[in-house]
Image 1: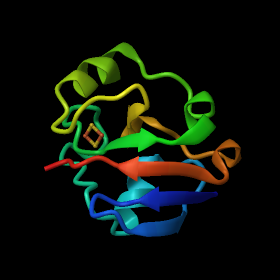
Image 2 (image 1 turned 45 degrees about the vertical axis):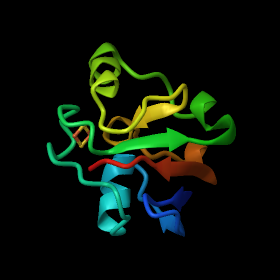
Image 3 (image 1 turned 120 degrees about the horizontal axis):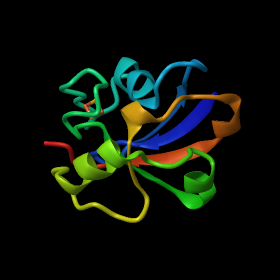
Image 4 (image 1 turned 90 degrees about the vertical axis):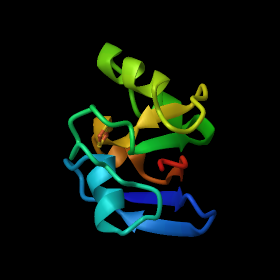
Length: 105
Ligand code: FES
C-alpha cells in the first residue's frame, strides 16, 4: 500500500508499506526521518507521532484510550489529526494516505 510521507525535515517520500504491518514499522524500515519508535510499537513512547492529512482520519480508525493519553504527552503539539503510527495497521484501505511526521525528539 502506497503511503505519501512528509518527514520531520520536510522531505517527501512514497513508502510501499506491507499490509498487516503497522504504519510505524513501514516508516521505520523506510528510514523516514523523525520516526524514533523508542518503545518498539507498544504505545508507550509517542515517538512515532504523525499527522494524518486530508480525509485520512476517516480511513485510519479511531485512537483507543491509551493512545489518547500518550498523544497528550507527545513531544510535538497534539493536533486534531494526530495519531501514533504504531497503532495504525496498514491495509489496502490506506492506499494513497498522506501523513506528516511530527518532530519526535
Ligand atoms: Fe512507541 Fe508508537 S512506537 S508509541
